[in-house]
Image (tube, rainbow, N blue to C red; front, side, top):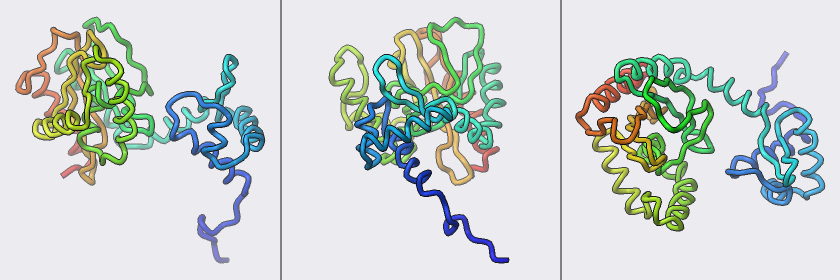
Length: 262
């Protein structure tokens, strides 16, 4: 008996139509109105509302009781992290983060790139008090965080430009932020990061926190993750040849080799 290829198999059209609505969430960064979602999916609000009602019942979507806006539900997070656990970087990354934390005595984390931006998938906290908490799944800024700057430097700009543009616009409206303010400044920072294979953020993401990140590469020599040490501002050596930077480079390079990077 001939087997049909998945792409040629008969499917359920209503699921494919509903998929357009779910895909509309990819371009959003905050809870979204019915009108905006329907327009992005190319369907009427009444039709979109029926799909959203079903998605809410199975946990794919949730709706705010305060303003009626829609956001992705808990099932999406569960599916996402189930997929992440199947990636080598997710499994191998914990060993690297733990080794880095123990070798430096500094809180360490590992981030990957998702549609929302740099996302923490592993972290290890030391005894040093830091006035900021980390959560698995937390999304960090691209330009203000050392983690994010690694992806700005090594990912194709087409994948980061939307978030970079949004952060530059926000920085322009907040002169006191001290962040990068133009594409020219971003390009200068990118060149420096590539030259040193390190990104440094000294209080730009959080006023009391400084961090150093290094890129981790996969078997195709594409950036797979950012490995980071995070400490109290003024109490972490941010020099390029300091002990935290040297240890970070060594462990990031070792993780890259384990992932097959050449």
